[in-house]
Length: 107
Image (cartoon, rainbow, N blue to C red; front, side):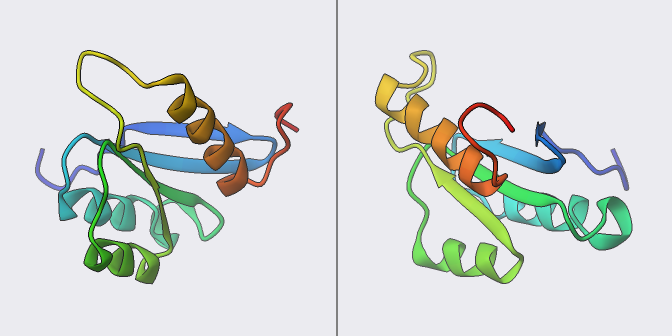
């Protein structure tokens, strides 16, 4: 509402924190939300900004996200109501560990 900032998820691995915007569709709004919420005056400069999408994004979205220091995780096999395939679950976990620079056991 109004000037509120909304984010979908927060993830932590060790002392590394990430904010996540999860989208099934492809919209610039997710990038805008992460850019605002992850701004230095809100959460500091050491926050990881992550956009998880249930599809593939165009090069233009990748370029825009990179300019805002936002990491994109694409899950093209996601189908609403069916969840993620095991392969994509593993890829999501590995991507999150990489972005948050933590080991597989969470340290």
